[in-house]
Length: 105
Image (cartoon, helix red, strand yellow):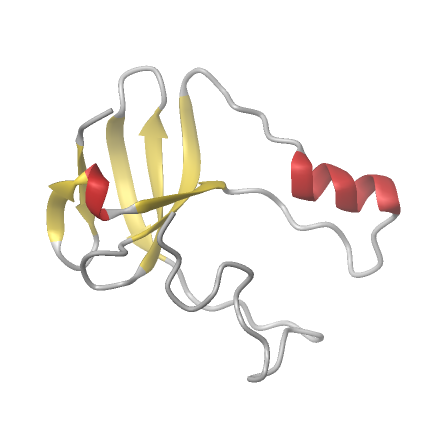
């Protein structure tokens, strides 16, 4: 698979500079049931069409951003940087991302 993915900071770059991090999904409530949590963690829609996705620019500016992409043609319709989520119960400064500081997937 090869296509250009426009980084919001760096402009169009080869997709191999990025790490795909999955579909954008809605988080469950603050106290999810086991079924809700399992669904959030493991089940994806995997649509044949336009979907919003998380991307990480691992070989460039190292920014996390969301892209709207048509999965049938790999046409990227839009990209945007996201704001940090501020919510009660958010992880403190001692927390680290599940994939480490610089995921290289």
